[in-house]
Image 1 (tube, rainbow, N blue to C red):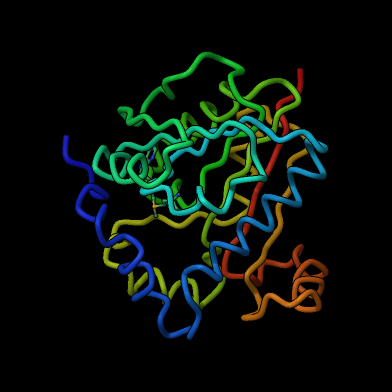
Image 2 (image 1 turned 30 degrees about the vertical axis):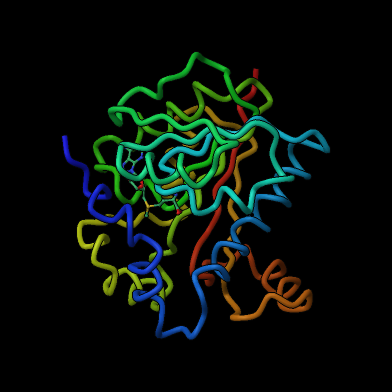
Length: 229
Ligand SMILES: C[S@@+](CC[C@H](N)C(=O)[O-])C[C@H]1O[C@@H](n2cnc3c(N)ncnc32)[C@H](O)[C@@H]1O
């Protein structure tokens, strides 16, 4: 089956960049902010060990070079075979697989950490409970699930989504809805952090963002939870 993102495997970054050009910021700024959030979560929740990580909906693997040194073994899966082929060619040290979008192709408890970055808004809402349930199934007890999503309450996020050609069918979900899904999936110690509020990455800006991260202001949010027992 042809997937929507098969069409964008060669120009994914350009399409994203054109949707956020109005901000005057490069796509790399947004990616680094996400990686910083992941780094803090890993340190806080998993300690010093570099986690074996599964990145669900990894697309063309844009993030993966930025994760070197932060995670141990990295695996990426996606429903778009063309994106996976592109990711594989760019990142020789990452294990990639395409799959049918239903059951993640791994045994239970296979990973220390599972991420889904800007993916759920492309999944049919009827599948959301199952999708988050799968993230829990494949993470080990004590492991971490982290979902990063657009914040629908931020007007600039809405503008970017409206300008992005592959987001036309996106169904945005707020942090509260994602926490509900995580709670339904029996993840524990769940929480959220809003970020990408300020257009700078200096330490002071990051500290201000952290102080305000409980408010739904930033362009994106991370929702996270741990698999207990
Ligand atoms: C906006 S892209 C994000 C790609 C990458 N995570 C990033 O942030 O650069 C969304 C990705 O989710 C994938 N996707 C959509 N439905 C999916 C599903 N049910 N399971 C896994 N991936 C899915 C798409 O093929 C696409 O590559």
